[in-house]
Image 1 (cartoon, rainbow, N blue to C red):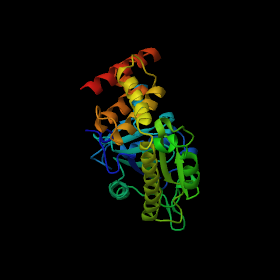
Image 2: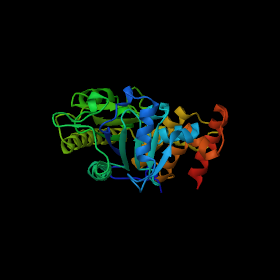
Image 3: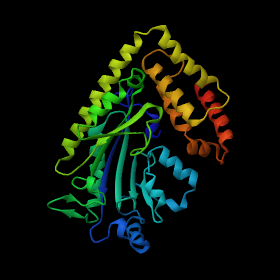
Image 4: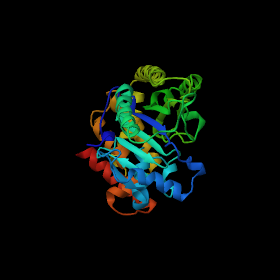
Length: 333
């Protein structure tokens, strides 16, 4: 089963953990200076599958738009890489390990896990990083560390992030104050798809701002400290919501009623409903659906993934109708 269907530690608040290393290959220009010949040379290093043989080599130009967008929706690849003519990736069957090739840097090593698993995810990412480093030479400076296209990645090249579901902080009106405080702690807090995106479905991504002048452990410890504080504040807010009694329970169940019975659902409406229903499940209010089904709905409801499941391109209205049908089916299984 793919990682994004599973529940991990602190899953009532933490959806997933991601560790990403930015790396470039010595002797090759950064992508901002490269031409197609240069990016083809980077591709050729990896396409024979000898660098990381346990991963499949996939050229993104060989995938259709729905598949590429579905991979973005599941956070397996970034939006930036699909615009690269020679973009590619190395991917495992569970889709929790992906090495993006020719994104912003030559290599982006990425490992994802359900729940809060920063140390475990870092350990696995370091294994793949060391495996690649044993076969190619990275661009590295004794003064600055790993050299990267973006200055914020220079140093360790590590970006550690945690995806959190924070609906109670929004409902109690505390979310903005909490996030403003956290943003002062050398931490980025962004929407579900990273910089410049909205917090769809009350999902927030917490990650380190820089990797220069610090160590992998220090980065992990800092991100974990902030994540644990957000978990604590979200749980406090949920306890407060419980004091509202039947009024709050009624609100939760009204959202569940729409999700379970609607004839059509747009993605944005669905995300809002699922957020409230997940909150109800995690608070023990809703018993008719479990976390596993919530995870499945979260994935299948996304526009491109929905169409991949249906094996055809759908018009917006068709998507909304099919989304409601599939959600009802999952709930009633």
